[in-house]
Length: 230
Image (cartoon, rainbow, N blue to C red; front, side):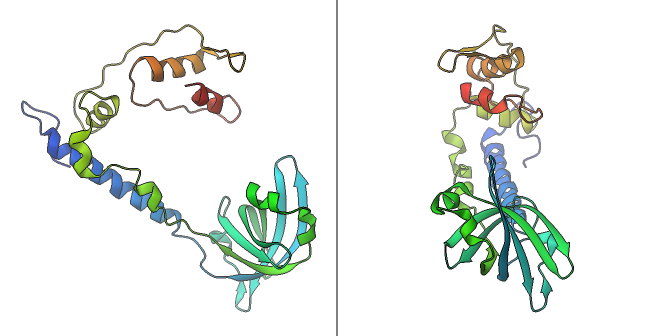
């Protein structure tokens, strides 16, 4: 970062803006790489020892082991994506929900993705079937491409909320806060009235030119609906 680029009598917005975008790309690249850091690159023989259907989807329990011992439990943590191939169903996509060691075998409970579940007329058909399983990795390049190149800084309007937010974060002028209208937001299409907190969020984003608003609350309080309305 260019020292004092956004402060003083003659701030260098050109150099500092490009530095911000370079730092953002480097940070995102590191984050995406770290997501694959603990991944397991080996292919394991597996057997489906249980299949359960619920309102939350179809879950299968797998046994993972090799001649050299069980798969490392640290690499098969919750939300890890994986693929499983069985003769009766082809290659299926799953997501780890839990894993535990039992003697020399790693037991993994995984949820079938929606697309894989749709392909199976009867998920129980894979019960007691042998196959192979491996973790899948995302090259993440499509996510890096969503960030503008450093050379694109000059094309971003200086008065835009996004520019003002980045400048403020880097030590430049503080973004002036504007209080939104505090009347409740009515979503006529869904027939609902948002709470005061939800309404404040929606009106802040849509009426005050605020670059971003962070919503932090427990699951089930209506964040998704609030973002959809905004």
